[in-house]
Length: 368
Image (tube, rainbow, N blue to C red; front, top):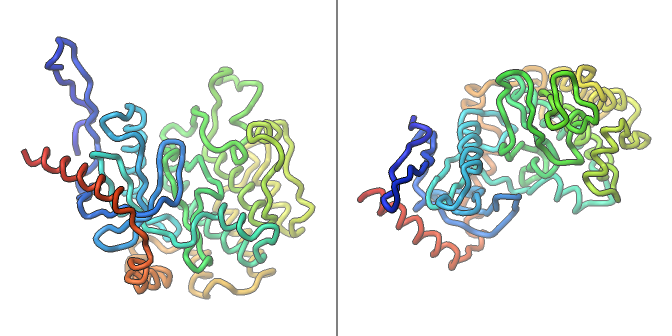
């Protein structure tokens, strides 16, 4: 591992200039010259996501903006944290980490999910809804991966349809974007994070707890469970919570104990949804309980869209060693379609040439 920071003397002045040195294991870094950048497929507040090819394999490339030399210390620290987190977690419902680069741009490379985001897919079929069996199947995928994360002391903090990706056949979902994820070191978090319509109400408390001030709101992993309840409601209704209101207004409505209507939900699942969005975080179940409830509901109410082997996984999720020994059908299909995918990608030649020159310059400086 590298040292986190290094102080260097500015040659043009007598001042000391702080230079950020990434604390990222070299094995997590890849040669940017092997990377091709294609069409843009998404964007966030500080990043843009592109289709790409790495060693001729389809990938998703998240590029942090601006370029590394111009990025703030906070951006670099967040990037470093996300890379180190992604590199050490493995689950069948988490996008697979491929590698990262730090120069000339900070980039995170993951597997490419051909179905796009859940948010985009739901919007594309609106006003129709997902079949109940598919909705619950997706909810189970999400619950299982959140159970895994919480079991490893990780809070996602931004669980929403825009961060849930679909397989190309639209039958599986995987969790992405760990830019806001944090480890539960002390058991409580104090930084407001997330997306308003899916944020837990404790992040908007009007009256601070005895431990908190007006500027500090304490919360823990139960904030993810609240976010899950809104995702589950969205899966079942294909509606946006408090649609027509500004996002911040919707969030404050929920902080004032208002919730979306459950009139259109299956009666057997309403108790689970309402327990997950309980105002008091202590009243919300853990994801292990949510998985059990959804599994029971699925078996009693839904058609068998999940293969029998995967139904066993719901009760006894496989560990990463088992996953490595038994690749999923989605992985095998993805590998068999690599050549077709490669032919379908449309490359932006000008963008790639510019990026290639930057990478070549970067590598030249390293070898000098």
